[in-house]
Image (tube, rainbow, N blue to C red; front, side, top):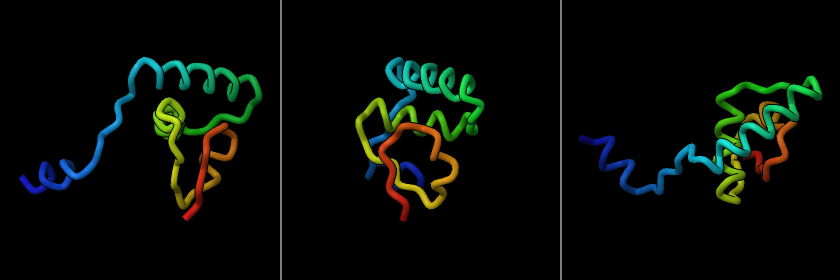
Length: 73
């Protein structure tokens, strides 16, 4: 399948227990501060934080309340 050939070029990161920990702590902080963001965006940011990576996006607004390394392209 074409998708398998394409995906084999990348390292896929999982929503593992470390990512879940980041998700829970960040979700709690955002909820208390009244600055919630979408849960899927928070999952993405949590995976990025757990792997000490930089999140590249065109939509800075979705991640502006999350303490994640961010680059806008």
